[in-house]
Amino acid sequence: MTDRGFSAEEIDTSRPHPARMYDYYLGGRDNYEVDREAADRIIEIAPDVVPSARANREFLRRAVRWLADNGVRQIIDIGTGIPTSPNTHEIAHAVSPDVRVAYIDNDPIVARHADARLLGTGNTGFFLGDMRDPDSILGHPTIGELIDVRRPVALMLVSVLHFVPDEDDPAGLIAAFRDALPAGSHLVLSHGTSDFHTGEVVDEPLQIYKKSTASVTLRSHAEVTALFDGFELVEPGLVQVPLWHPDGPAPAPEELRRVGLYGGIGRLMERNA
Image (cartoon, rainbow, N blue to C red):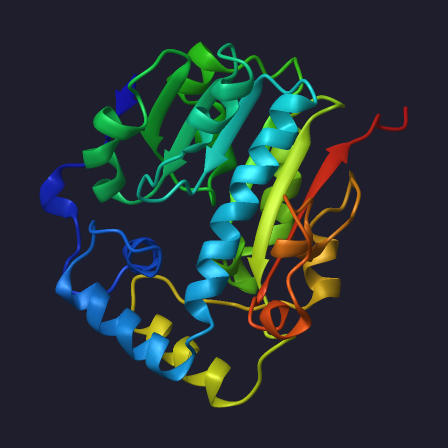
């Protein structure tokens, strides 16, 4: 089921778009010249953006597999971005085909790819929406058809919240979703940080993103940890994304220093009466 909500003519190709730039970092082709020019400039200044993007994608894969292995059967994936296989439902369905996945993004270009890449199997849906309006997402018909919010749900916000500035209250937005979900639900989150990079490697890319359709706000380990308020972090806690349940040996320290993203999963505990 797909609800595009916007026409293709509303796709903004005059400015770089972070989702299309991310697609380019991952080696995808669903981007425009304006995106490639901005991304290439960032790669020139801060080449670590490429291994960071790829490490983030691997974190998503491991996190979804962990959710499915631990009995999660409902996922709300907000800010899914331009589809890159394996997608959330492909990873989850490899464990259990009955996992239900609702994809949400605010970029009309994602809708152009949803039918072919996100909705080829059952138990999936897509609609255009903005995480800054939790009520409109939770009240959307696609959520109503796919997701039973009386039962545990995994809310995925992978590389999304660093595009939400402080004035939009990211913690308050998460709290609105959290308070609508039952105990046993999970929050999957990854977030950009400047804890491992300084100077122009950080400053100049941030200026480039300011000229795109969404600026970036990098946050410290303590600031990202605070976004899990009300959730109990599962082991190993909030860590650089390659360190979260790695498939093999942890990367060498010099490689790990290149990855400017934290990631983790929190479990929603029983609320006090």
